[in-house]
Image 1 (cartoon, each protein chain N blue to C red):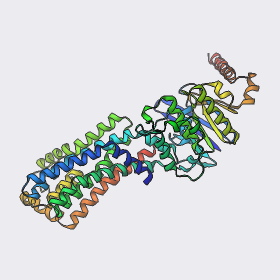
Image 2 (image 1 turned 90 degrees about the vertical axis):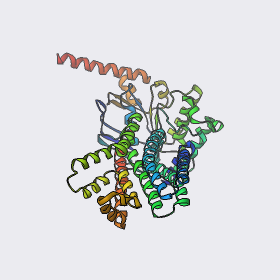
Image 3 (image 1 turned 135 degrees about the vertical axis):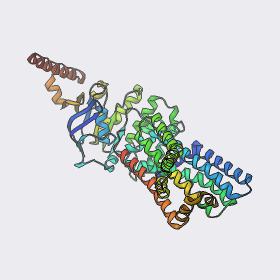
Image 4 (image 1 turned 120 degrees about the horizontal axis):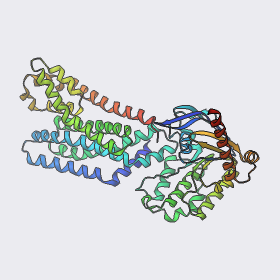
Length: 246
Length: 255
């Protein structure tokens, strides 16, 4: 569904993405993890066309995305930091997005109602707390029942109850065979959702494995421990390299 | 595209700056027409104000509005809407509202007091300048991500077109005063939309008789329909080129 080929992106001195090639298929829930500044958001923004890569191509359902925009109809995106017109009210924001998209397909307003956004629809965006903003972002991402969901740190800032609601929703959408791409630093949140893990560091892919593969290779049941094992392993390789280099 | 422009317009109407601008133009125009006995003299005074105020307001308002609606622009770009469409809708919304403000603020008084060819020429010049300077402001805003730099660049450009350029032209004319400079000054004036607008309008009036030989050659050119088409053509280039450059630069930008 989404194929990334030899993607490179540089921000002045920082090599944000280095030769990234990945393939993602429907039904997968890919957990995109890595330390801060490892290029997760840059990769997501490249897929959305918000960041223009220096070289490499991204294919969506077999066609290169280049200058096209229609493929974005099939993506629901929840940004890490939701920025919305400050002088709008929640209700106006949703009305505007619906009006601009002008789609006849039925909308998925489950999260809008379950997060009780309809009760505060007259609240101005300026006055919203970080968590409520996250709720708005989440409700917008799921609104058009898109085939691909890209969620950038979805649970950060949400209270435990809302976080659970969102996770339930993600699991339900996973059941429909959608492709879901999630980044998060809260590995326990990812544990129940993920089918595959994509680990980025300094703009490079360290590994891209399915959960069973990962468990088998590392011998660890927990996601956090499996990753720690990988890190230790990678470090050993580095040490060996250093010894030879001497 | 209309749908997006609608939201841009809605936002502009709500923040009331354009309404204040309209009121300001109305007050200035009416009081000038009231004070001067000869209404064509009033048009001349009005021209001098229009040539300073219209570019300044167009530049500053467009850049500030661009940065203020950055969230809206980002949001639109996560939806299936192309960047060209977003940029052009923004430009259409802003220039459309400033144009309406001008046509109400200056157009209404002109219609009442001095509805002839000079009055119409004043409306034409002001409208074109509004479009030109919103286009240039968009280019400045798209090119610089930093708000302060963008607004600074817009102000500097306004200084250049409104003040510095005239000084440079005077310097050139002074240095080459021994040579016939009529054609050259014509070419020089095309490089600055404000100058072009001023010359075009002045030559629609009787005051051009005071400008001697140069005035006569100019009168011959700008007085004819050729002059009108020339002015329109050059102004159109001044609108299309900055907008096109802004679209191109925006298409490559990382958000």
